[in-house]
Length: 185
Image 1 (cartoon, one colour):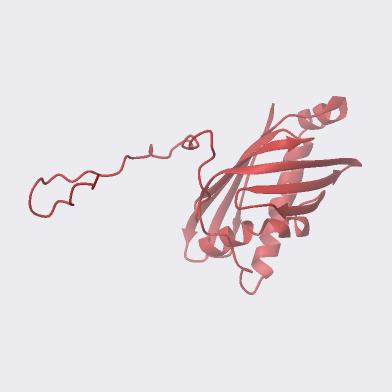
Image 2 (cartoon, rainbow, N blue to C red; image 1 turned 180 degrees about the vertical axis):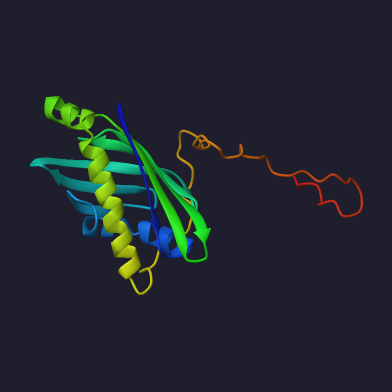
């Protein structure tokens, strides 16, 4: 698999950058080669792309989404194999760093050569620059998906590097006064 990592600082508050990114249907407005993204449910999107004459259709699944922090996804069907995460970091009240990391499987000799020459790195860098212009030009974001999708049937996603491990539900430390009542049978 090939990998790409790029970041850009945008001149909008964290919630605005995050909310705009969750408008997947707007991706064709700033992502080169993306013709259409259609949300099929809370966790899935169908993509249609055309990059250098190579048309692809595929489906993605959101495997984790933490509002104002990150969205991670993987492909689950179609012509493309990829896994990625976009993270949002508050720099101050009106500036946000958007960082994108993807792993993908190039198809054929041309895509493998392009990956080796950094073609996708440059494309992602350009897409992030266009996102910066797009989100900064918006008077305000046009909504956003702030919820967290239910975990996949195959279990919860692994924590991202640097995240604290998930905690179990806290248990009361007191056994008498102030403790929650025992569960009813």
